[in-house]
Image (cartoon, rainbow, N blue to C red):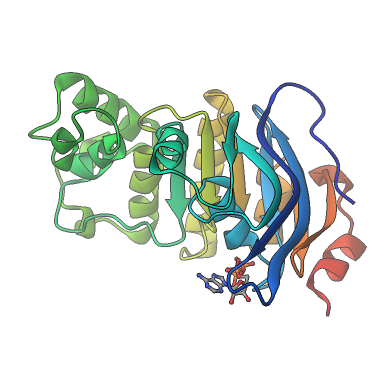
Length: 256
Ligand SMILES: Nc1ncnc2c1ncn2[C@@H]1O[C@H](COP(=O)(O)OP(=O)(O)OP(=O)(O)O)[C@@H](O)[C@H]1O
């Protein structure tokens, strides 16, 4: 049962959202999802239930096949113009399971890469080219993730957990309104995963950033989100406050 976000202009507003990749099979089968500014939402579901597809539709990376969708008031459709995608990207931070850092570049340059897409983007290739304001902001973001002292180290000399914190700094460097994270802690050991999620959720809360993340770790979903949305076979199975999610809800989500 889908519940609409309580108040405020939605950051994300999907109604009856459909998506098929091949016109033969619908991967998303009528998803209603409304997320208000400042919410922290976990998207859960079995492998193949459609979580990543939904995230990609929400940011205009995939066109939708039916229904309606607006992200930050920007309507999205079957074929999204590059300008629409860029407009959403400029206000959105992304974090993926694999941190996708440029391994041979410094930590600081990797954070400066978060400015790609803004005017004068070529300066985001390296911290040497970046304007002072970008470098300063990147250092603040590194300070937020407690890695300012590693700014000039090569990215591939950091541990997996540290690299994921660099990815968080890169996602937050432009102070986005929305952060979308696809399994942000999945490649980390349990303790590093918990540390990264603690930090990530706190930074989003401190900066008033709306957060939508997927996770296969139910502790993470229930701890770091204030709302949990379960997808099953491309449909929303439930959408409720995290403290209302029961063991039976989780069983229904993951059982055939
Ligand atoms: N680019 C694509 N082209 C065709 N089919 C795709 C594409 N991406 C995903 N699919 C299909 O869509 C369905 C949903 O996949 P999706 O990756 O969205 O699920 P998921 O819930 O994120 O899974 P997981 O938990 O394994 O990451 C799957 O059947 C998958 O094979």
